[in-house]
Length: 386
Image 1 (cartoon, one colour):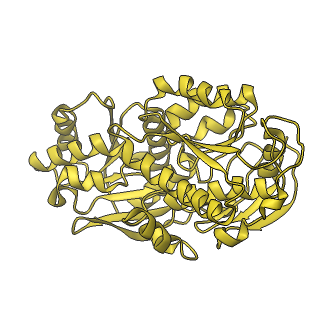
Image 2 (cartoon, one colour):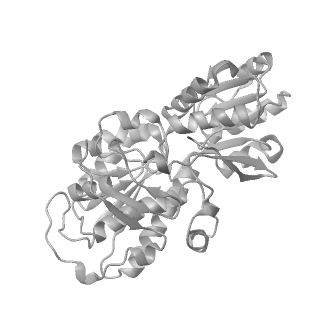
């Protein structure tokens, strides 16, 4: 069990809520940072910035960076740096990058990793170094069962998203036969299992493909046609999902394509083509970014020249949690961990409070369904989780 502190802090106006004058810089504090004050301390972003999984990582990085830059504008004499580590979404690189982060003693916390596989690989390194982390997007359920004390995530896991997706398939789509496919990744396999467990007899077939390898889905599509499925759930990422739906439509399969947050990216629609992607249902443990409080959406677009993407607002809030922790004098890793474990943080996307295993408190879970319509991913409805 973790010792809990009771704090309620706000993030609606990050630029003002996090302001502490530079005069506060100068104390001594043991426990993990090279300096006893917050001046010059760092946060690390960990996720894909290049490669075929870059879109999601860039969304997250941009949200976190906006928070840090807004903070630094108000604390010009006592800035916090955001160090960016590009994992390319490759869990094979994760351990080495995690060790690089640990070597920098000014890093007080990690925003990320973005994906479940790289989280599974990197988290033990940070656990040993006692470096707190909060992922804005890694949803594999069992990540919180490893006994890690540093691990936290700012959204619901696949044990909530999977059943919600199944509920939408049953109650909204009214599908009678569902074929389930996963890409065997840490994320896709775990998510699909949760969907299968919730579908019951509606599941008429199940198959596996290989992420970054499978390009010809026709053998699977033949099975889908034979099964008579009127809905197909794909557990994986948008790169393969776009190929799958394109080949499904070419083969005359009209079953509704359903996927989750790994496919909720404009890159899916672009790669699949508007006509092929039309009607796709995408679930996400995230509310529409248009519902973010305050001026977040406006400020994000002004800064980056485009609308915020999936998990940009959650990443902004996670950065805000760390920055608020620093403002309250938690300038060592152990004190930052204690702060995170006890905080109730009112952000622009959600309220954040963590359980003893680092999960988002169930009372704050949000699962939404989105629908591709006219080439755009539009919000459809919130799926109740309780």
